[in-house]
Amino acid sequence: EPEVTQTPSHQVTQMGQEVILRCVPISNHLYFYWYRQILGQKVEFLVSFYNNEISEKSEIFDDQFSVERPDGSNFTLKIRSTKLEDSAMYFCASSDFREAGELFFGEGSRLTVL
Amino acid sequence: AQKVTQAQTEISVVEKEDVTLDCVYETRDTTYYLFWYKQPPSGELVFLIRRNSFDEQNEISGRYSWNFQKSTSSFNFTITASQVVDSAVYFCALSVNTNAGKSTFGDGTTLTVKP
Figure 1 (cartoon, rainbow over the protein chains, first blue to last red):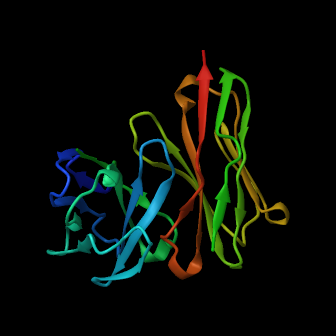
Figure 2: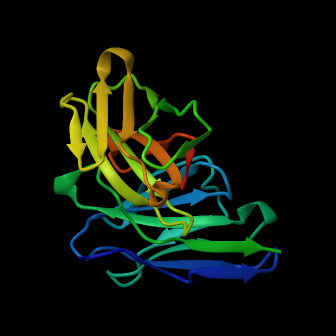
């Protein structure tokens, strides 16, 4: 069964460092998303991406965050200068237009900022 | 704006008991989708069900059943004959048709099933 894969599974970084989280969505999917879950809290929407551009972003997704799909398969989330409060699990998801609303989530990348 | 309320923070049951997880949602959109996800201790999000706003039929899948009532804006989830493996955090989520992949999640209900 096709699945969304994310790397790394866990990354530890120093405050102020840049981090790139990578995702490989399901190959025929057209819509891509990043969500965040701070430990023990709810899952929060960060950004949606379609047709090589951001379609919507939340207030969490400030100038420190960026997304891109550099090569038609990977979908990346970059945090330019990490802060302690960026420590969270980051989930990538993708969906097929024909099944709008059904998200396929990856297993998550845990980011720890020290 | 959308809102999802899961009033039960934690529930603890003994194996084989039935348990219902409550979910109440708010939206002004007439077309929307409701979801339940399971997050086991390993951390991944496991999709359980999607319902659209035009389909109020209740659904049963094995030991799982869902009761969607638009009149009360609720989408409750029942596990029959619970098992230890059902122990997890369960999230209810809502998205609307304008961006169907942008889901608003509830705070989650932690279910513990004791042997």
